Image (cartoon, each protein chain N blue to C red):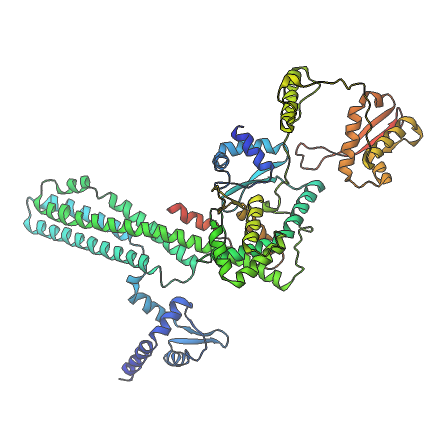
Length: 213
Length: 412
């Protein structure tokens, strides 16, 4: 399979292409000429490649949502997502609680299953959080073992494209840019629902500063 | 005398409450809030007109003259741009060297005057460089202790880095080649410029680059911290929302203009089928079919040899299929169209409503269209088929078929 086809298939399968999940395809799409080629191809079916706001990933989006079919499709996908939202938020909180610097999960971040499990088994509060996540994501929630629940949740997150597991034992997990897309979505919803105020975006300024480096 | 007493008491008030005043000036935008611990400072400062009352909510604003005084005495702790100063001094040095060379062979007084001037400028450049280097060191070591806001820190570091870049490019002009041009064979200039100045510049620039490198790391760290705090806030607001409202379920139905992050296309299967009507692909397809069959048989453990596959001719056999509700409706529709011209004109959308099918209208139209394509020749002689087409402006190349109407041939 050539790179164009491989990128196209990933885009069509609703994947977020990033350095961590699909490095070859990400490098290919990072080249402006290749991206423009892909966009030209996709534009015939009213689609285009979209870069996540933090620039860490690409996904396929509609050029515009100009008919009911597209809108229904997007609404249906959102409905599916919103059913898992509480579980995902709880997972983000759990992972942040376990991180020594309280950093949230971000693309490229690493999680070790054994470290997570050790922290969970040491704390009742973390165990409760894990139970809550398992219940909300409907993953091994009937199991009494934290290990089983954690593994089932991690497998689900890998299957959904939030993590990749590079090691053969599957105990190390690397976050993909799907988290970037998720945060963008959450931020939009939070603003739309009046939970967050629109913040003057200093992203451009930061980029300029990084440019100076 | 009373004037001096007044001054003394004002300075004493500042001295007694230095910590509070300093914190207010550099961390609270000069505002002293009403609190028990600030009570004495507020009383002393307002008494000497060094602060004025804002309101009960905001407290007291320290007078700008106090801030100016603090700025003045702590200036070496803060960053200030000096590349312009260096640039001027180098120009002065160039002028002094040029003047020295012009007079040195015939006027000893003037020669000495210009030599002194060169020495002074060199010392000034050295001093300014040492001060600049130490101010950058302080910035790196203290992580801008006077700036608490992350955005401010990022801005300050950005400015510092820019300044280091400018200073570096100014001193790039002071290359060994340039200094040699100035010195030529003069022993006095050689000692001042090549030995003293050059060595100090090299050390200072090396130090500046070390500071620069550290600032790059700090900037990256601040960027990460800023991003993390933003994402943590998002996580927290949702966690709180789900805790407060167990039934919370956001909706985007009413949003007209969806952002990119919500315009991701659904999972779409990409696959292709072999063209069984094409002679060109016939050989390949037969080959593929035989292989697939063999592989299936092998998996079952029934056959391992391609030659052993027995092919049975079942073309004349009849097989019964059970039609589902939709297929049945489709068959009924076309049967009615073909056999009963009285029902015409009839549209696919009308029939969709009549059958009350459990599928989307778009899917029904696709099925009707597929049926027409398959039976085109047969249908054409019986009915006239019209497609109602719509175009969404601006035109993007897509034509939407909103309905298919069957009419009697020659009918309205």
